[in-house]
Length: 331
Image (tube, rainbow, N blue to C red):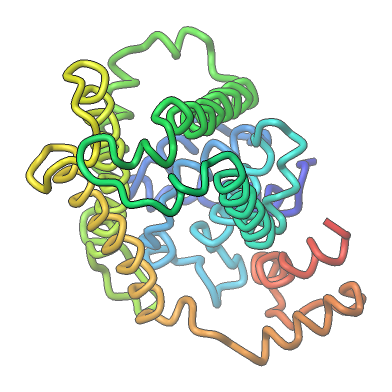
C-alpha cells in the first residue's frame, strides 16, 4: 500500500513499464526503474523527480490511451512530483500551502509588500522619502545598505536551509546509501545533466506537446529562465564585491558588470516564462475548458459528492478528480 492514490497508480504504471522496457533509452526514469522489482513511496517520488514530462514515452508507448492498460507516465509522474514538493516541504507545517499555492502566494505577497511599504514609510524621514537624491549611494539615502542586505539575505538563507532540509528528507526517504553522497563523479554528472537539461529532449528529437510535434522550444525557454536567474544572482554577487571590496556604491553606469549581468538575466526571465506560456497555449495545454471547469466548481460546492466527469480509466479518474478531491477533503 502507498501513501496516496497517485503513488498507487504510479506503481501500477512502473510495473507495466518494467515488463516492457521499450522506452529505456529515452531518459533516466526507465534505467532507474529497472533497478527495482517493487517500488516504495520513496522510489516512486524519486522516479517522479527524474521525469521531465517530455512526452516521448507517451508517444512511443503501445499501451498509452486508448489502450486498456492506460499507461500515461508523464501525466501520472507530474502529479506525483507536485505532491512530493508538499511531502518534502520544510517546515512541514507549510506543506498545506501547496494545495492552495496560488491563493497562499497572492496573500503572502500582498501582505509582505504592504508591510514593507508601510514600514519603509514609517521609519524613513519624510524629507528623505520625498527628496531628490542623485550620485553614488543615492538609493541608500532611502534604505540603508545594511538593512537591505539583512532583509533579503535572511530570505535567501531561509530558502537555502529549506532546500537543504527538503533534500535531506528526500534522500532519507529514497533509502540511498550515505556513501553515494561522496561519489563525486556521479554528482558532477548529475549537475552536468541538470545544467544541460539533458533529458528534456524526448530521446533526441525534442519535447512532445499536445500536437505530437517534437520541438526543442521548451528546452530553450527553460534554459533562458534558469540562466536568467543565474545571471541576476551573479549581478547581485558582483555588486556586493563592488560595494565591499572597491567601495563603489550603486547606482552603476549602464556598462558596469552588475547592470549588464542584471539586464541579460532580466531578459532571460522575461523571454523564458513568456515563451513557456506561449508554448503551452499554442499546443492547447492551457486553453480554458469552461464546461469541465464549471462541473468541477459545481462539484466543489457540493464538496465533491459527485465526481468530476472522467474517462473510465484509473489515471484519467485520478487526474481529473485531483482538484476536486483536495477541496472536498478540506485541504
